[in-house]
Image (tube, rainbow, N blue to C red):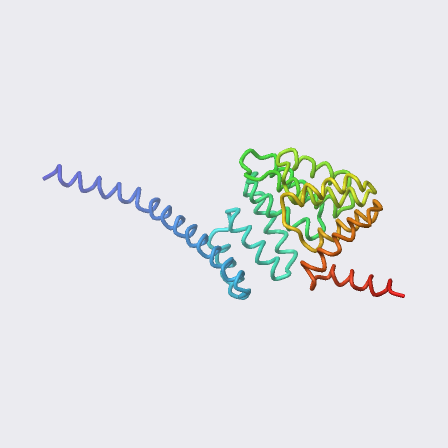
Length: 255
């Protein structure tokens, strides 16, 4: 009888010792799971254009658990859409801090900072992402870093990033197109032509690429090739802004 009482008492002590801790852990895990679900719902509402619901859900997620990079990143996306730059920047910063070098987090934050004019900061994050062995598409990160540097007026830095992208992926379309544009801007028409030809071999034509081709050929003095680009522009993209510019030029050139 005494043995049974002892066992019962021990069981009671163990329950007193372990139940609160276990309960606290379960409660924390439940809040973390709820936060993750609310963050996903917030992004879904944002994609649907229901920004009020998105804001409510992300605020709930942050209240439940603000210590994950994904929740902070979702908050950054949503407050960016709400045009609240102060909050968006803060949440992107928190996401980078909590992400501890996660290249996807770095890339997403970098795109925001490059778009909002913090070019060097965005460029730095992109180069960190590109250098990560965990990042699946480092060439894309280098291209985005180049775009960021180019927007900041640092053409030489941009060109270095584009070349790194092409060293990793020689057929990377965006890098080829960016190099064609940079070469044309720098007055190197032959190099611009070569990069555009490489681009055309791996990507479909667009109004902007056909216009670029025409511009390059006119600068090189090859009016026949320039006319071929112009004709394609009119035939394939007659409603484009570039085709409209072409028609305007032709009208002005008439006697």
